Image (cartoon, rainbow, N blue to C red; front, side, top):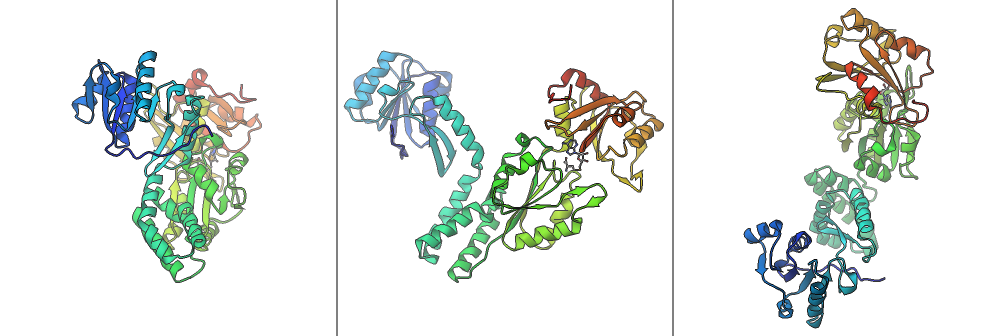
Length: 468
Ligand code: SAH
């Protein structure tokens, strides 16, 4: 280990920065953020520093550096662009045994600055020991995405209950297990979902149960998660985290195998997919299953294609949970319309072509499309997106023409959008049904109708194999 990472308490401690440029300003802000009383010494100052000086939050010493200037400070940073002067500052600091950092000159430093992930009171620091600060920063970004922003709030709640838990649970290994459950389970998720009061209530219940040595009180929760249209890279950070925490996953046909692979390996996986006219699990049974699993103390991931609230029956599922008092949270996903449109190079709205966009279902019942106001759909200046529109494609196109849409209105069918199997067939209301009939189209497909489809010629950027 080249350096010992330690966390320094700088509250109200005098810190000196030598240098008046942008780099000095950045360092000044970090030290100030950590509570230090910052003085900046230089003949002239960058605007950012002048502003900080004017606000009275730090002292600007307008002078040339002299060795004696380091006296009385607890921490020194040399951030000038003059190598000799930096060396001079470092030497003066070392003579007085004051920790010193010289920007970009690790050899002169007695301490170095890490890349910081600040979820105070949780703080993580990453360092490459000066070998590659950029690499440390990239690593920091990765860690940032793994730690929910609300981690700090979780730590604060943990701090509040710490003494009580210590009194209630005497054995340290039992206590550790207790905290592990709390901090990676439902209590944590409630905090992340912004329901801190409820989190505190549940933590309170858990402590009571534990002190009465009641076993098995585990709080389950349902995560209703949108998995996006197919490309695993389009998952939200929260979706990915919950996928890695869940005990059991109930997933749909639309969830791609690549996405399913990202679910915690030892999680139980239950297929609840539906195919047209062939319901694997009736909806009521799915609703029941989710509630029962959560009530048995499990963290249940209900993983759905796209967004759970767009043609996803998410509303029905949470209604049951709500009635039965089961905790849940809903995580939006990228819906097929946005995913397919983006990857097909078709902006859903465009100043020149469409001022509104409608999401519709082309689902058929007894061979007919249901409840569609064709007059409204036939107005100009809008984009129509039909989910589940393949079977009804011919009827949709002919009805629109009947109700006044031009027969040459552009239309596109996007097959397996955002995946490596994406295929986009384009045409007009008149020609598209024929084009689709003579191709071997594979579900799922999305139908986009409107003048915006023309833009694909210019904007198509995602071209996986086969989609020329
Ligand atoms: N909740 C989902 C939609 C479920 S309905 C969402 O928000 O996207 C199922 C329909 O979505 C499919 O019949 C198809 O029309 C559409 N769909 C979902 N993923 C798709 C994809 N990758 N490519 C094309 N269409 C898709």
